[in-house]
Structures are given as structure tokens and as C-alpha cells.
Image (tube, rainbow, N blue to C red):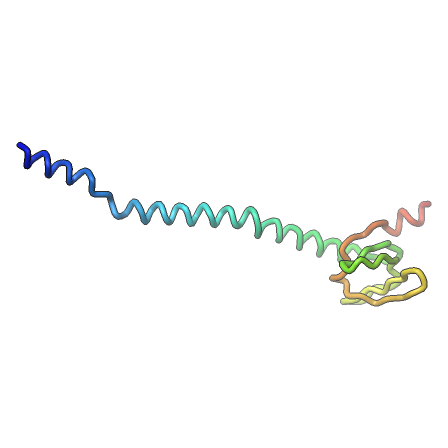
Length: 110
């Protein structure tokens, strides 16, 4: 009887080798979903919003560039924007425009 109990106890303590693999794959999937929703998806949304902002630029808009230059758009080209800032006229890349502070319509209504 004692030998029978010893064999029975040994059979119960052997873990299933597939359980560890399944747990690892599950954790990797959870981390993949977390990475997608925490990092990749918000970055895609931000890039999409910035592209829409660049398409909506028009002369007369007051803008701020990523380097902190504030100015009014006086001309648009394919890849560049001409800005009037104080007494200077600058030409910057469209991608450098980070925000529109005032639209041209609201400036004309005032």
C-alpha cells in the first residue's frame, strides 16, 4: 500500500509542460495588446490629426511652429509655408507647423 501511495503522489506533483508555454504565450499576447493601445494607436491618431491640420492651412491663419515661432501664413507651397512674424518673413516646412492659434475667418470677422 505504501508503494501505491508513493506512486500516486509522484504522479500528482509532475506539472504539465504545456502549461508553462501556454502561460508565456498568453502573457506575450496581453503585452502586445497593451503596447498597441498604450503606444502605437495614440501615435497613429496624433499623426492623422497633424496631417489634417496641415491640409487645412490657408493664408491668414496665425500659427505656431514646433520651434516656437509665431506668425501669420502669407503663402503656401507643396512642402513649405511662408510666415510673417513681426518684421521678418520666414519660410518653414509645413511639417514644422504644430498648431493653428487663430483661423483666417475669425481674423476677418473682427
